[in-house]
Amino acid sequence: MTLWTWTVLLFAVTATATGLYLSWRQKRAVRMHRTQVPPAFADSIKLAAHQKAADYTAARLKLEDISQLTGLLVLLAWTLGGGLNLLDGVCDLAGLSGLWGGVAFMLLFFLISQLLDLPVDIYRTFAIEARFGFNKITPGLYLADMLKQTLLMLLIGTPLLWVMLALMQGAGDQWWLYAWLVWGSFMLLMIWAYPTLIAPLFNRFEPLPDGEMKTRIESLLTRCGFHSSGLYVMDGSRRSSHGNAYFTGLGKAKRIVFFDTLVKQLKAEETEAVLAHELGHFHHGHVKRQIAMMLVLSLLGFALLGWLSQQTWFYTGLGVNQPSNHAALTLFLLVMPAFTFVLTPLMNRFSRRNEFEADAYAVANSDGGALISSLVKMYEDNASTLTPDAIYSAWHDSHPPAPIRIDHIEQCMRQ
Image (cartoon, rainbow, N blue to C red):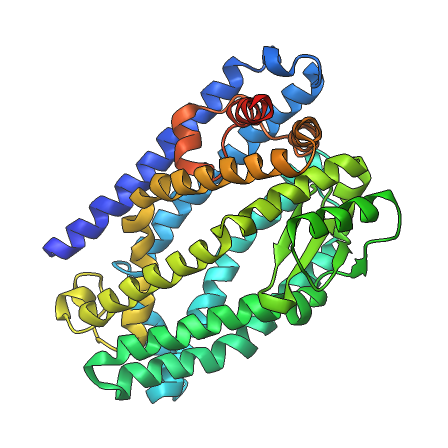
């Protein structure tokens, strides 16, 4: 047990304990307010819907508590418990060594991690989501999705891992810089390619049909000077009754996608207001800033990994007997969440500021009242709690709580 060992244990246990404490605060907050709809929503949200949101939130939090505890145990099992050493031994017995041995090691690690996460995901989908009427996915479709995801991981991850490990092995002391360039290029490529190459493997996308909604949206796009490769409706109802809308892609490959559940649940003017909010993110450059921040943070991460990979204590302090490039990369992925956990509230603060700016843009370019009514409908239909604990929300939520967000929209409407 070295100083590095105790440091990792301290941060990992603290992160888990903090997560459990915040979860307790959130459960207490929704339980305390379960019997009464907040006054600001009394005319638009029924008590039954409010109580459903409280119970749904509590159920998800209980499962998240279990996930956090098992996550800590899995981290300890992989490191101090000798799991990574055992996996290295399996690769050696299979005659896998060198670069391809490292690739096999990491692919096995990801596959095992996916299997370990499977029970929680199955319970979330077929127990909690089904109990509250949200799950629409069949066991067959769930299995098909999982197999597709695994196949994509193997097809895309194998060459990427090979390049990364090859750079770690043969590119000298500055390998981390070259690896970051590869990683950054890969991420940008995925953002560009996702709408047309990956997303259609899981969902069906059809052009938004002609009608009032399409006319209003096209008029909004013209007013805002926004160009996309098309307006699409996605068959989200095959898997869930939750509704959403999003932008995806880069450059000329940008797509505007509406869940079919959202199209059914919102009026034309409400959908227009939701889209105006999303356009606000592009108008203010939020998407570009997020990509830039992602690249900067990943550069810092690769630089740190470049240094840590040369330190013997980085391996021995976490139970790895034989230092290697693939062990360094795997250890880094395992322990970094414990250290970056404290940055979450700061990241959410920036995100919330972006949401306020996007809402203000939506009010200026569409109907603010329709934006409020659309948000209320989505909060109700998605069973999102209207009474979150302030500290929990600041730590976990990238969007402002409903009362604060709607109050801000109303202020923008009065200006």
